[in-house]
Image (tube, rainbow, N blue to C red; front, side, top):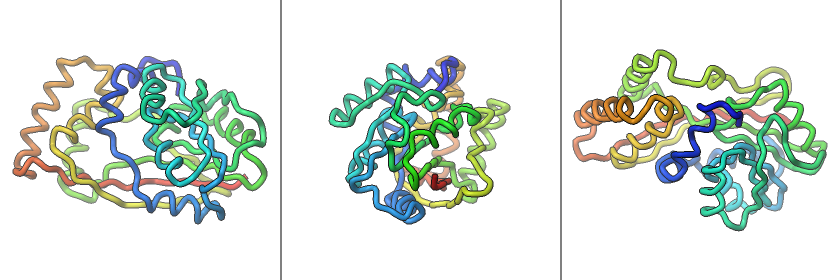
Length: 243
């Protein structure tokens, strides 16, 4: 969502991102509708930081009239390829190129931490109609699962600080409702490793170091998943506020 090299690193990995990143469970959008007090079907939704369109596709399938907002060239090209019927606007959450008071929902999926909340919160509120919903969510590895906790510890050790400095922060305080939605998916080990490799921290360290870590990680996973299929467990952290 910003012009930093790390934020824009996804552009060169857009195809891998679309192919390997996890989606979100149906229960998440059920929760968004329940907390917002209205259905997504027929609603006008701005999906900000839409990336390759993973959440955009789910919103569209719910019957929402989605406008995707994405700054990155590579990510936008992948979104156009995957979601040709969804309008795409080039821009970012700190400066939304959208009309004021026009939208029923403004959503951020896995994108909020790339914004400056001092700008992005007022911008989201500006484009919402009265009574509209501001919804943010993020897939986090479920570290209550021992093998996932161990993998996250290896990642932290490798990078010192793996995540973006603001990655752990979603808005909170009066008016914001928080909800956690657990879910899982079963994928080949190569998909799991490719998913890890699309994290921005990997995309900026160079191919040699990235390949070395992922090769070692493949050996760790072989002991847990001898059939080559990995049971990934996530918790989607959702935050929603009504304007």
